[in-house]
Image (cartoon, rainbow, N blue to C red; front, side, top):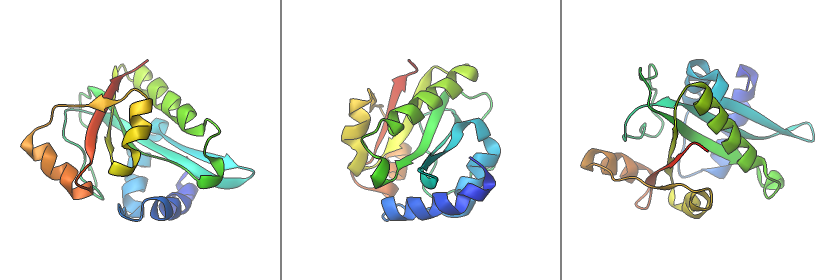
Length: 159
């Protein structure tokens, strides 16, 4: 991903996730902090998807539309902030390729766990990818509730 892609990322995020708005500054910060975890997908020369991911620590999700400031050090897991494939690219294996790239970044960082916050709309997709719910604290439950009532913190070992 390049900084020039951020307008496309924000527009695609808004069209695919209208209930979970995030400012361009959020995506720009993640790209600056973890460029190896941020990828763009081109489909027939058009912007068709993205992966935003980064090192993380603990079982508290970053709150929606919140800047991190910095990455935790030391990290203990790799966090998938967002993965979107535009409708015209779905069913072609691009999401799996993005997850594979997140795993590769995690391995390069010496991290053995992938973690993410799933909204209610994506729970089945992530379950098919081998992600399972984490035991969470009351503090994490409050963060998840800011996404939606069924949001869930999920993890899986890096393959």
